[in-house]
Image (tube, rainbow over all chains, first blue to last red; front, top):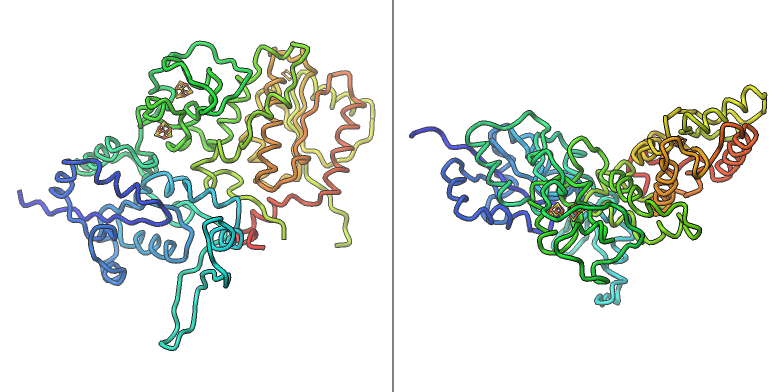
Length: 325
Length: 147
Ligand code: SF4
Ligand code: SF4
Ligand code: FES
């Protein structure tokens, strides 16, 4: 077999490193990857410099798996560079797909993030109030750091994206499937989300009986019945508004889905979908009771933005908090 | 700015009660400000939260959802759902830095032409005081929030 090997690249932008582990988590299948492809760029594992990537011919990388959101000038530059050098660009993981956890910083701006991180956090000791600057003069010359943006963006708000592989991180079975599809040249049409066309609820083994609740519990407040749907027991579970592919793994560990799979197929706004779903079951049937109070009922939801957009704030319709000047 | 700010308000009115109420306001020649763009829906429960967010994203200064009175919804409980969604969305809008008063949920029956006019009038006044939606400015470019 003298077929020429494919060229893969991996990159991490604003992410936690979990996606890199997810690649390794495909275990021995990583050997299949190496059998079909040469890895030409992977900052976490191999020492290839940015200038080496710049020197590569355009479209010479077959598939680039890009994880992380875009929040700095450097990440934006690499997104553009890798787009230019790659035939296929895959938004890998929740952060590249929808903004992910780093995207929650869109409730603040650069100034607020820096104040919190470098000045106010209880574990910080910074008597001279030093915060990062984009350039700094030292006797030896000028030091430079990339600009930190006010707003976190998804990968496809930055460059054209071919495929999305959701999850925080993407489940290894999903990653393995995608690698197989690439090897067989069986990728679906451009723009596809590389995950099943169903919701987490569809994959969830719990018994669903009566979607009707009047009280909401935080996870630590009750011990849920291990057989029954968590949402029906008053624990906010994002399953109905989240795309499957993970086999409902959090729910199997007795924790509610927090939504890392992104919006369900045919849904554009994950948060809106969950607001709709929750409002349809919270307080249902009790509306004619004398003590029914819609405000109180809904008041039990303490943090709608953080709960419904945990992984998708930058991809949401409103994208970020508006900060008064 | 010398010209007075005229807010754009999107109104989702249910076919059976509030749209008929708006109609009645019209045939009764009750005057109310012309800032409302009405969209007729079969039931207030048909209004997906995404529609409301999309209206704001597209530059609406306010959104009105009006449906039948409690107990009167032709699909039994659509108005209760709309009300709960509305309350939740107001909380969410606040977290997004958008004044919750820009979203209004009202019950208006087919016979309440005068009430409908009063609701619109009051809403227009409220939003005039608030000024243009911050999201309108945001749409122009994400650098907005740097302040
Ligand atoms: S809401 Fe959560 S616990 Fe209930 S069926 Fe869906 S995924 Fe399972
Ligand atoms: S259950 Fe939800 S949060 Fe957990 S892995 Fe699946 S999609 Fe992600
Ligand atoms: S039909 Fe009017 S609110 Fe449902």
